[in-house]
Amino acid sequence: MNLKGLLALKEIERQNYDKYIVAFSGGKDSIACLLHLLELGVPKERIELWHHLIDGEPGSEPFMDWPMTEDYCRNLAEAFDIPIYFSWRHGGFKRELLKENDKVAPVSWENPDGTIGTAGGKRGKIATRRKFPQVSPDLRVRWCSSVLKIDVMSIAINNQERFKGSKTLVITGERAEESSSRAKYEVFTGHRCNSSKRTVHHWRPIHNWTKEEVWDIIKRHGVKTHPAYRLGWGRLSCMTCIFGNADQWKRAHGFAPEMVEEIMRLEEEFGTTIKRDKSIKELIKTSKIRRTTMTLKERDFSFDGVAFNSTMIVPEYDRDWYYEKYYKNTEDTGPT
Image (cartoon, rainbow, N blue to C red; front, side, top):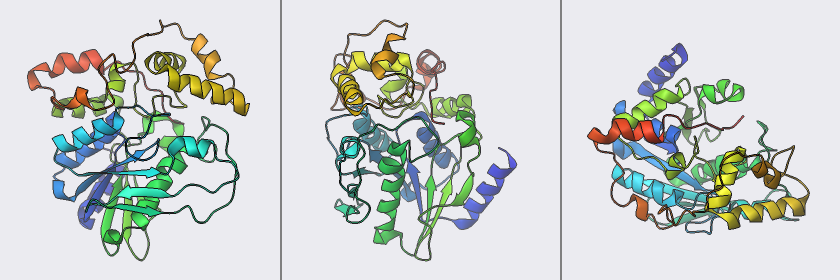
């Protein structure tokens, strides 16, 4: 751990937070953040996992995201006996993409008592989107990150009474080696929700970790990771993430042809492509891999979580070959 990391850890120990919120995508880096908290001795009863549903309310038909991610996250939270709360922008990615002369949609979130909170959607500019997000460090261009994740968490924190007068630490899993832009992120800083009403800080505990260190802590705890890593992805975001390479888009087309072909159709309709230099249809043609004809359901990575019901933990005697086979050589294609 470098000096910035040590100083951040000392400040976190001094603050003694009431709540530790892990922004939990279900990917390797958010899993590593959770495991790191547990290894540091943070009490489970103070930890919450928050997952933002990209395609809208729970159970929505997938438009961009992996169909099994919601079930995967629920099962992992249950395996560690840690609560998980889902939040979403109404209508998800598709509504925002197709927005025409309208305001941004409201946000809803799950409360600990089982109720649903809702806020937003009443103010803001009338605008038209009808354009896919594109690869860029600018969140106005890569709008999916801000509209469907960052803003959703902020609205959910700011509109829950339980955070007023308390100390909350938000944990996210960005790492410096992912990109030159992420290398500049602060390890420990005030969160955008920090105010006189509530103390909210932001910690990136694995910012200086390598990919190997991330996999090492996952292997140490034997966590069975999301199926995306077994299917040729090195990081978990949407199945049809804008950062995906040609091989991943070709695999996605084989696993869920209807999803990818709808995206192709909308690119043509909008006259603007996700990749600046070519359409998804053209990108797929550059892939050298064989197109799979086996859908996600046929591979038993199903919509209803069946693939996760047996166990989320790999037995210790199986971990060496399991992680070597499935994960060590995965290729990262990540944000700028």
